[in-house]
Length: 379
Length: 153
Image (tube, rainbow over all chains, first blue to last red; front, side, top):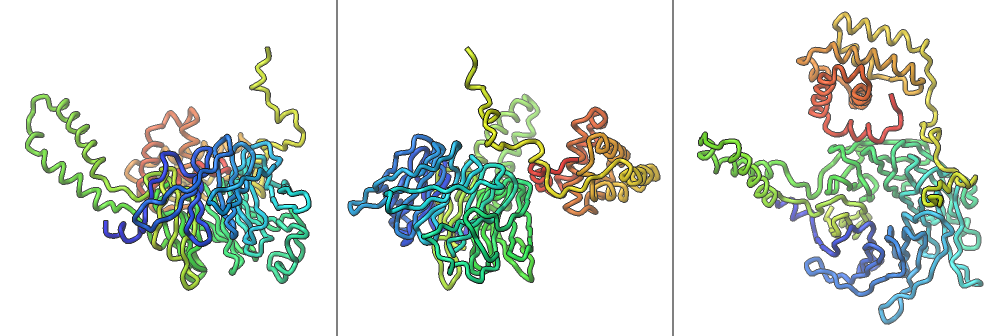
């Protein structure tokens, strides 16, 4: 229990629906989450008191699948209704929506602002990545498509800090790196001496890795020019421009849905096991380092043992043994389930994001889960 | 009236480029023919008849014929099933302990495949005890890998 208290900094039960995606503003005062077909914006009030709802963004008519906040505070949401909205913050705290026509015929699944905040990429089930940017002369968000050679739904996207390279993973089992270079918006200086190539015309495939199973999340480590991704076979993979590919399996076997780079040699993963797991690199090999907020088996066992002990004398009674036993087991189950300790998340964790950094190392991480909770972890 | 909700609209769109069965085959898969595989099948058989079960299972679970056609895979499966079935219950966990995680992943593919064919169902009990011992040793890892792996046996 003491371990739990140490690693969980805050636990906000916000909604009764799954939270598929969440994002904090750059100054960490605002929190945006997806909830059914809305996006809710909260203001943080410290780790102990619950965040207060400041705005409800409701223009989508189907489930909102992803949300991201740019460096300038603009919120972008995308949804299964095949649209994206950019929400411009106004001085009175409300948001003005602008529809972005993505020109896709399937659900949008993931969205990410480029570090500059002037363009964003949307992954979709239409086997398309839409890179969208604002055109001043038309007063309109333009969407350009990356199509080839994507064969299936894009699950996740991640921008390199240079704002040009775009990593994307999907259900076709590939993790690919594309160029998201927009003429007139990006400068070629950003990719000078890049180890990934010389020329980056928009939409060109830079690299690809075959993993075989659904790729759930991908994250750049731009300073090291490496990419981490997690897949549905329960693996964490780290690749680089030289073609090196390192894999490590989840110790508990269940797949991860998300990852976050903690520093150059450690990655935090989380997914269906409901608690984050830290991996670290030593001598060029990635290894399991530790579990965060894991309910220890020892505690769970102790509670059942004590319950068994209490009922010893009744078990000697031969009469109506099986029926009595059945009832007792039912009863026992009920009591055990209340006594069982839960990890902070009671359902799968679907997204991890870096929350606070210090000395080039992430020290706090936020997560959202299918249980409708936002949790802050100390790493 | 035609049930328009069930019309496969993608079939009318040449640009749809939807996934076909061929798209799901992993790239760079080496093709294996029955002739190339025959010596290995013989070797597995002779090892299991001579009672060297550990070597038989280890050979069977390393480098399985992913890139072979269905009838070749079936012959290989037959040899693997014989080896699995001839192993004594008491030896199973010992053999599993000597396999690598990669071999665990291959072994569970043959267990599932065996349970899906009549020849394997006849000895379902022994396949289940293999499965039980395997999950005791390796947890759910091989099962998760099996579910998400497109290389089939």
